[in-house]
Image 1: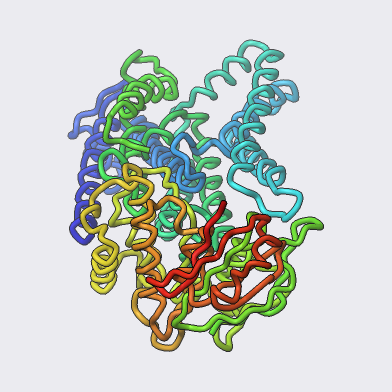
Image 2: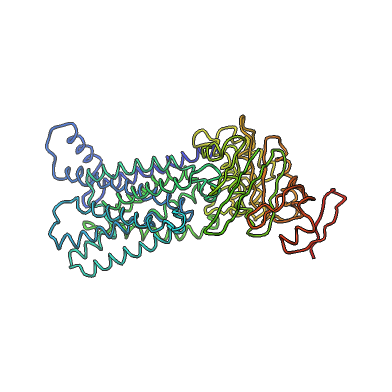
Amino acid sequence: MTAHRREDRAIVAGLAAVMLVGAAASVGFGAIDFSPGDMASAVWRALFSGDPLTLNQRIFLELRVPRAILGLLVGACLGVGGTLMQALFRNPIVEPGLVGTSSGAALGASLFFVLGAALGFEASVWMLPVAACIGGVVATYLVFALARSGHDGRSSIVLLLLTGLAVNALCLSGIGFLSYIARDPQARSIIYWNLGTLSGGNWTSVGIVGVATAGGTALALFHAKQLNALMIGEDEATALGVNVGRLKWIVLTINVLMVAVATAFTGVISFVGLIVPHILRVVHGSDNRFLIAGSAVLGATLLSVADLVARLSLRPAELPIGIVTSVVGVPVFLSLLRRREYLF
Amino acid sequence: MLHARNLTHRIGAKALIENVTLDFEPGRLHLLIGPNGAGKSTLVKALARLLRPQEGTVRYGDVAVESFSDGALARCRAVLSQAVEVAFPIPVRDLVMMGRYPHFRGSHPGAVDEEICDEVMRFFDVIGLADRIYSTLSGGERQRVNFARVLAQVWRPSPEDARYLFLDEPLTFLDVRHQIQFMKQVRAFGARPDVVTVGVVHDLNLAARFADRLVLLDAGRVAADGTPEEVLTGDRLPAVFQITPVIVRDPSVGGIHLVFH
């Protein structure tokens, strides 16, 4: 086990190295390419010398760098969220949006696009993330409230799962209705937002998502051992001293926090939360102490590379990142499932 | 000692167990028997605090079971249930190590935990499976691995408390050789002077062969309580199980044996 733990650390460290390379590439390439020299001089000017920044340097510092960091953070949120939900539901097909968070956020955003246009308040850049975040939290709360069973007031995992599916379907039909009645710019905004983009990244969103990522990941790691115990069943985990009811609440709250906040700033990015934990399980097993740390790093890497692809493939225009994550994620996922040693 | 007083648990109007009062002593093997729906599993869960009965109290020694913290309870009480399904690929050694989770200081095992893990895997002859993935094991192998996990939880005596072991239909997936072997191991472990063992077994002959004391439940109530000879009698069995066996003495083991027609 000690050797195992050393391997855990080595793998996470290796992934982190890959992540840094990905992040560096993501910072360097895009509509405009920056050489390491350009980057260094931009940082030098901004931090140490009083010289005014050139336009390119401002693009680098105010758009490119925060966008790259936002990509890392959102990827980490989605990866950790996916690991948490799969562990909690004891089910490998679950993704972080399952309890309604991302579809609720999408409905909130769609409502903002349509109503905002109708009522004429497009003003603040904050309205969209706030609307999305509220949508995500409300939909998740609705799932919980409805999943609370009548006879003993507890919510069983299966009930949560089914209620989540139902509320997701409801949100999706709401989004469908809104895009059906919306006029062209709003309808396009809804579609675009549902495919996700990191283009709105700035230092404020980095700060907010950063707090959610750091806090959520730390809390998740703290509960990793209890989530391991939950793998063998609710009664068995209880017999091992886990307060399963409390664990459910904590883990779902962490997931809502991370996913709602991340989705609020980027739109719906599919598949990352589903496939990241699976890749890691194939690499090194199902121990949540490893999976949570690993999925933060691998999720960050994947999303930052996906964003790079999204920006480079149609240069100088860009592709919605959700398309990239699905196009790359689906074949990877399918090939994983066909491996004989990956048994359920 | 384990004391259960006036335990009653209902779902809707139906009482799963009703007014059950029993004491269980350390060093002896207590087995609960009874027809389907008699309340055996509910009673075991209530005794192990996996379920809190609506009425009545359970005490471990002098301490009410509710006053244990989750962690403290898990360090002195272990429960083996019927069939454990794991949705994710996990090596046997990691699964057995879960039994040590309540004893961890942080989130990783110490040297003692590794040592105990190896001991229990050798005791249950599953050390050869240590690196196998749990879901690839046969039903019988899984059950032995789970028993190793459960015993890892209470393998060493705790300085102040007695240890409590509960078995909820542990024999379900075992073939006849492993059933006998399992019951012998349970009895060997349960014979320690600080271990209280309560199990649910369906097979009346295995129960009669291995139990020091049998408790017969019927419709949530205690119908009989005593040695196998006292409990498994010709007038009681037809009333509870609706079947009339022939009761024979088995001179080779000095117990009774039921033959069903």
